[in-house]
Length: 309
Image (cartoon, rainbow, N blue to C red; front, side):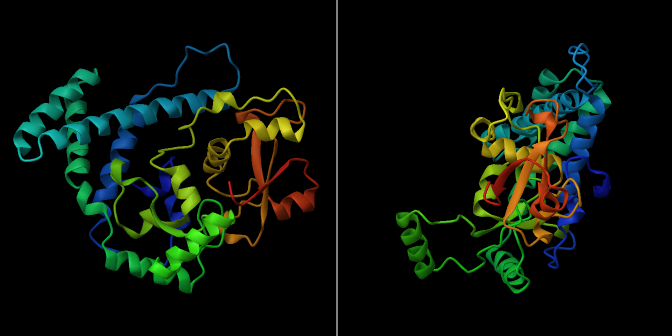
């Protein structure tokens, strides 16, 4: 199994909670990380923008290329699996042919990618937690008052009974629904091979879970759009969309840049986005996030944001 502590996409051990799903399910997640690792090794950092000195931008662009190739490979696998549901042999033949059409690689490397893609797609249905497993995770999260691993908000871990759903409907009608319902999250998304092993399952609020969706990394957003020509808060906020904020947090592994504590470890109500280089404008590679405690301690000037992204 690929060492997950070396995974550049996400340090999943940092979200290690005290529940176990299946001792044998690590193999499913390992397929996904192995595929990502192979694609990452294949992608040579782009030199087409060598005249731009911002290396953080180059890193993000390179990451985006890796993510796109992984997404296309997996899309080929899932799409054709739906077509050849009852014919595994034909599925394998078509999958290999389509991968060869998409990737100009040596035979050995194509076959490695083919095998991993096939395993991920054929095992997809096995990576959905059963209701019993979901109930176990929910009970444990409620008992230990787990917070969203992305934004750090306290989670509403109650079961969604008919009465609970009526309460939610009333809150929505009054406009004070916080979208903090507990949802079970695959850190490496199921579609890319994320399994049911303990290290790949965590809990997130409904709001953040929807923002993350099937994103593979922080680069899965149009970060070029976040460039402000003014330091006024209104100007910054107009550009600081929920996807941009999520990507900044994702890039920092959902932890404060200064104290390096995870947001779910902190009892705070706000976070702050501020400039790394004060003499530059607000743009994606020049913005970092710190927690409320560090902002107060170091008197940092930035844009305050509630944990609700």
